[in-house]
Image 1 (cartoon, helix red, strand yellow):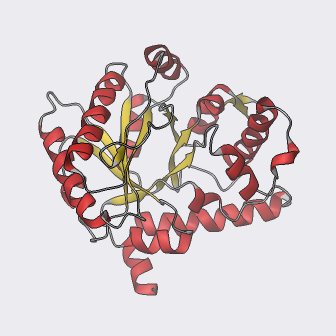
Image 2: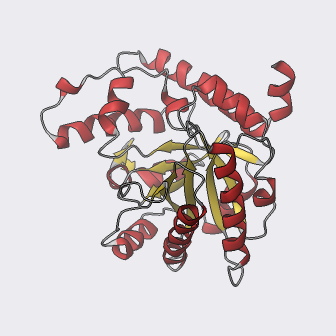
Image 3: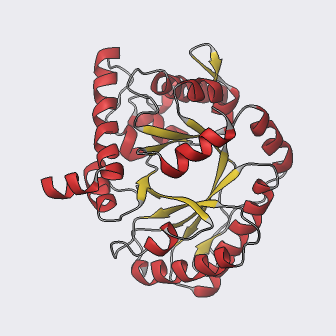
Length: 303
């Protein structure tokens, strides 16, 4: 796919983005969910090899295509690996799936009710390498735990600073200021985040665009002004700890927002499944998430 074709697919495609970007800290939990216990590896390299095998199995599954999965977010090691004998970004593009790269290096300790991103040494070199491999965009995550305006403003400022660096390399950033869905101040935090994001988007110059990856809000369609903002290419939602049925119900209540689920996509997949079982389970998950993303009225009517 050309850059213009990838832009059109992300902006207009009827589907969702798969988040296949678990990194070092979350990999053991992801492998356990897949049916591989922690004693199954003795080194970090073996651990990452097992998670790569899982991702390659997903990417090469006959049900994982651009018809319903319009994009996929990769961990750096996955980007550098192969699937089906091809570099992963190329394997995705050949299936009509637009590749993204997770670039953040984890979170700082909480301050002012939020967790900022850790420093990203070598980011420019990583962005250059990603662009050469055919990656379309990036994803960078912060966390908001409390409705603290100063903290939320700091999250947004840091996110947009990194976004400008990403844009300077010809890539499209997915800005992810995740609101903790377990927060007692979640509704107020959603509102403050909307205000701070709107201010930052309004201040952008030129015709550059970003993407937003947001927690599903307590108030349906709260983020519709962001969906319609001229500086936003697409708004996607994280599952945030919801199981897939609940995540899909919440997503269906938010028009113009598509999924970018990780656990909610992978939760029924197991290492010991036959290929037929694996593909059937993955296909069912894809169909459910696609319906909540692209056919919201159909899901709402069935609820």
